[in-house]
Length: 383
Image (cartoon, rainbow, N blue to C red):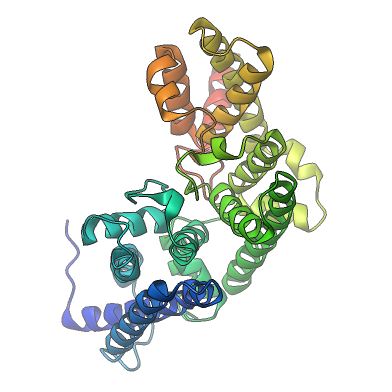
């Protein structure tokens, strides 16, 4: 049965949707600052225009209801659903003027992909995209990975309906007793992970001979793509471009970290390390990845693609971890995947993508928790 919305509902929805659009407009200052620092004058105009348009429209929407009061469930669901579409529309404005997309719909697709942490791209030439445009793509992916609603809650924008909004975004983990503090923990933890990963990857890239500024940006972007399990890459060749096994190891660590439940991460942060070894999702993911890697390597050997064992294991582990966490980073080129992989290898990758990471994480899929519970149920039934 369709939910019926009254005029008063639409005014409340417009007010809070406007607040989120205003929040999104301020995030455009990040690529705008990057454009100024890098002296990319065309992107300066793009993001100044996008910032002004989003700020003006968001402010006008807020005027639809000056004092909206408490929100009801149907209004909350509508706001949560609309923010991905309306937010992506405004986010697409500066990308459309970049000249990297055939039309506005392609730019809109890119922004939806970023906000939903999907990772599909419609850009014409990612390798030569402006630094500011790259920064905006990954800023959207970071917002999508943590959740726009979560970030708004951490800033105190929604105070009266925080719990309902938090649940409406598909989250139900009780990280901390207070919803605002929970959102702030997710935000702070994610920021610390991104900063740490950026520094580590920057050092690795500098050792590979890449200049410091480029190393910084690539380290930042790859960390965001890995931790938010979104899969956006600053290069069309994905992780293959870097040809570095230390970088691949670090990227896998952050992909796995992004696939963990925030509630579990909070317990570890509080010093309860034993939770890692007793958690059903961690054990399920560990056993699943080990089993899939063995089968995937066997399937690669059957296809006579990689002859040396180091390449087999390296490609097998990275591909299965990337698939299981729903990140999508590649260590095999598109041509290699399309022409040299066996049907069995394809099937294993598809199954791994369907499983996904932990419940309450940035990864998709049906979640390891359900797989673990199903296996325990089958075992108990047999016994």
